[in-house]
Length: 325
Image (cartoon, rainbow, N blue to C red; front, side):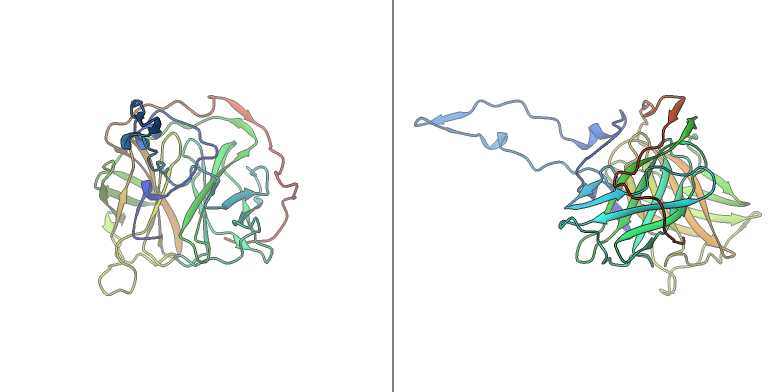
């Protein structure tokens, strides 16, 4: 994963998307009006402007498969109480589970879990078994439909982010998206956001960490960086994972209070930002709502009150195994 990763740059085919009014329309060019075919000596030729254009690319995380790689959950639902093993596989173009990965920021795979109303965010790291099955004890805070994102790089291939929906059974009460704000607090820390998201252009975002009114200047490296930022677009959960400028030990990057990122979002609308940072031996997540351009209201993907049933495991596997974060 590069320091500046463009969300619109992930070439991804859509498998199952909850389409929302705010975003996807801006990703696709409008269809050109039909042009009559030209005839030449009884043969029909297609005008240049009518020839097929390259397929538009989709942001990361909107699809379950890309380039022959597929994310397959083996656990059919998520626990809302005691953590239960969540198991999944990444299969390759040969339909076999992938067992060889290129390490990125100290891990072979980053798993992001978030409810479709953008609450309940988790960034965790499953353990890979010899048979190519990933597993981690996992519990989510409340019932609902969750999106799980696998962010990884197969050996010999570019990085990919695949996504799939997994339910947490129970009475779903969605949480409204918090209003856009420049500051947020977590565990006594205040994080301040400077910079704005600009659709279609690279934006510099700086997040400054303080505690008790004093700048934190001794952030600790976490996964090879002083901070990790995930952005998800409201409505369809298009995904962006970037890393900050510089790295610990490079002689120029200070351990706080500022952590700077460069990111590009593909459309106007509301985004939820999640900053992971480590201090005093503990990783914390600061969350922001940011707006790129003019936000457009989006319908909820799931009704206001929905009982989410437990889904059977698609592969027939049970949810056993051992893992750690």
